[in-house]
Length: 420
Image 1 (tube, rainbow, N blue to C red):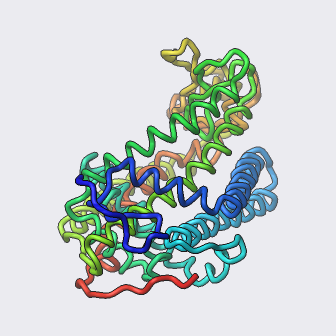
Image 2: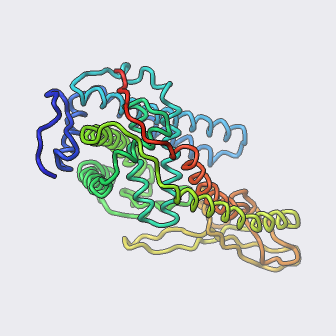
Image 3: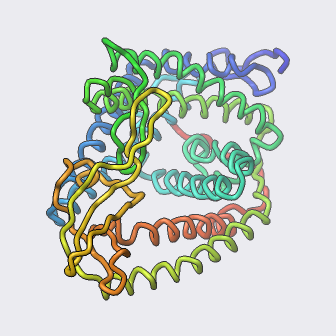
């Protein structure tokens, strides 16, 4: 991209998209953060606290056995999740004001955000389901939609658009610039890897830093530093402050990119093409139809199964390139009422079950007519397969319907800036 003068207002901390390089936009991002560093430091502290609260609430909800307590913890976790979105919205508003040469306090950037929460959340949700469905169908369409709609949430704050217009606005601004944006996001990620994640992992794993595999978290295998001490909390610490800073960096960068593209392209909305909506809806409904036999089979199994108690055995593990081992299947042995010994191998892992010591009693349901057909008697292990199929079908269907109802709008001129 050729070098052009910056925005007309000398106080502004952004330039036109065609008037600067990716490095220039990254530099402008850091300028905005540094110019209002007390405000962004406060937002960082809030995000950091939310990350820790969410981690301990989720962990507690998985470990406790009381249903009312679990429900309370999940509700508190949802509240923390909403506060994290409000914090990122405040960061967008702060960056919006500061990038124009103004100043804003923490209280100022938080004022009035409740009126923008619904459009912001809806835009984020639609972007997620559209991008996820695109990634399920093909990797490249998933990336195209993700990049094309990546500025939608920013538009709900910077220009006070509703969710549908914000999505169309993002698609309009990114038209013809998706490859350039992909490279810019990649550069920002590399910068964050150097200045955030690598130092964080070194500090978390010091002394004796190494890449190792951590115990699975909600069935997901994670690689991090410091687990050689047997303390996965070190990864949480790394993830919390690194993730909080990365979140702020990304939302400010998107605001800078949004204004840079707007400086070149002006006002306008552009609806998405219709064929992805048709394809996603059709595939989603087809997936939901295929999940019906899974539901009927599971329902029939639970109606006729016999309850017994098995014992947890050594899990099936897999060696990693770093020399560590990772659990990827839960194994339980059980004996039927007729004395037959059998073994269950479940691909699901769950904290509080899969991580218990070998020999721990585990409830098991088995089919008396076919005792080799059995499942661990916890809800996730019984219905997990059906849920996975349903979630994929629902996300694909929701993606298609979201495009039909929210994304197909005619192009209209004009935009309104957000008042400080």
